[in-house]
Length: 302
Image (cartoon, rainbow, N blue to C red; front, side, top):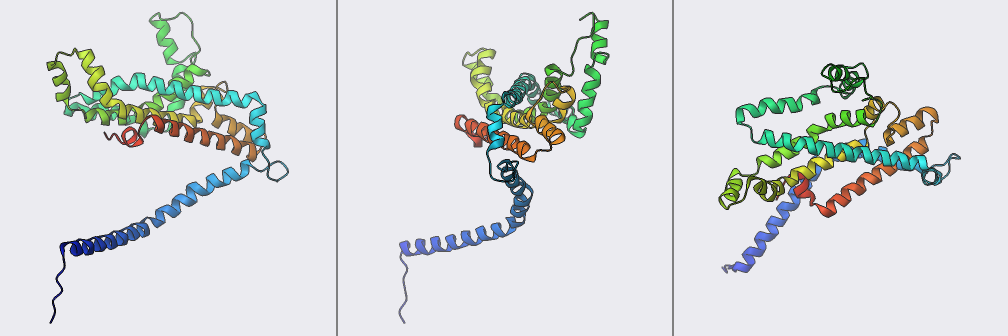
């Protein structure tokens, strides 16, 4: 009887074939398990978005047409709506950065027994309806609201000032709603920073300010970018807060779409606005991805 002696190279090749076969079986198993979720996403997301694209290219005569997109180029009102949308989104993001970074820094350096309590205060707005929070700000900011009354009592101003139904009220309401979306990823990035790194910078002669800007801040940028992207993208599609606190004077894309459907019942024009906003959002994410790595910006990896 002849015995077949396998060389080390043949053994390695057989092992690689067996591993590749096992990997293929695992991939097919994972694909089978994820098929229901893929079908749900296709039905719930891809089909409506595809239908939106289709309606945007249907003219008033029911034929293929670019008339809705031509209107957005011809009429300056559409350009103003998009400028207002991006302006409000950018200003809200900046306000959240200014308020959220110190807050996240404070939470990251609290003792463990206090962190949960203060984090609860940050997360508490998530448990309240968006519409309720918006109308609460309307009550607080109106001319006879609590804020104006308190300010006049302590002498900040003599007569009620207009804090609602304008850009000011819209930014206040949106910043309050969006703030947790910036604080949470930023807090996660700050908790991963080792305190020893700041101690090492101090031991090397760096001042606290220099240690912060040269060591701490660069390490927290991943969370800051992730939070800013989330806030900015969510603000682009806001409807309730600008409609209530803006009082019709702050017209964003979502508000304009609603107005077109209510007064003109033109699904094609409304769909075209939605398509342009979707493409603009994808463009913002693409540009952000060109400057920041999404794996580090969105998931806090080094």
